[in-house]
Length: 119
Image (tube, rainbow, N blue to C red; front, side):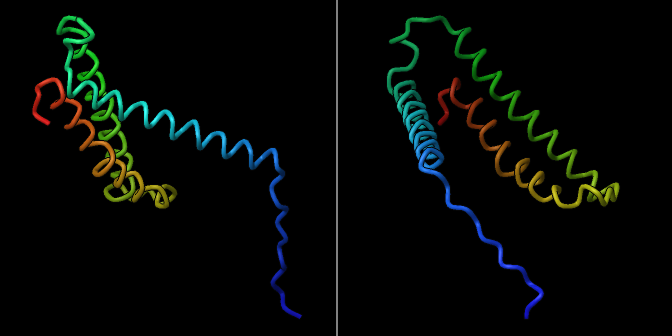
C-alpha cells in the first residue's frame, strides 16, 4: 500500500459554476467596453465630449503616477530579497520584479503618451 493519499475533490455545485460563468461574462463585457472607450477616444478625441484640456490631462497623469508608483513599490519589494537577502520573501520576489518591469512600466509610458497624441 502506498503512503500517498488519494484526494477526492468534490465537483462544483451548479450554482458555483453559474457564478463563475457570470463573473467571466461580466469581466469580458467590461473589457470590451474599455476597448471600445479607448478606440472612441483615439478616433474622436475630446471633441465629442466637449471638455477642456484639464480633464484628460488629469486623468492620464493620475494613471501614469499610479503605475509608476506600482512599479517603484514592487521593484523596492524585490530588492529586499536580491539586495538585502530577506529569505522569507523569496517566493514573491520574482513575481514582484515581473510586475515592476513588464506590467507597470509599459502601461505608465502608454498612459502619458495618450494625451500627447504619440500612440
